[in-house]
Image (cartoon, rainbow, N blue to C red):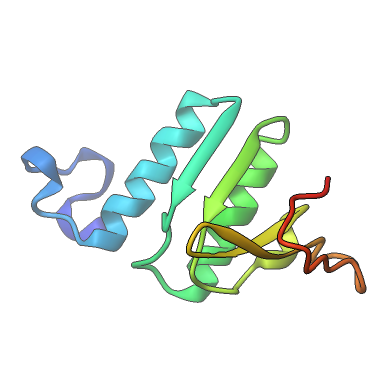
Length: 113
């Protein structure tokens, strides 16, 4: 954001002067300001580095503690921040587990909460 003048900089329509990663971070900021009860993000950090990805997930969880956060991810970075991980393939549940605990994997294909 510094390259466009920081908070007082000009944003082109549709964010044409932003990178994909900058657009993603701006969208995360909008989520934080809106303070929704349910957040569904699909590859919201796919164009930023893994350290920034971890910081974004931690920020969402710390700033929206009572919100339900559903993330669709293809990276395994930062899974320990989530309460439950559900691995899917072609619409079928392959595995579910609590990443904070060991031995909690369920390979049944059925959601068990």
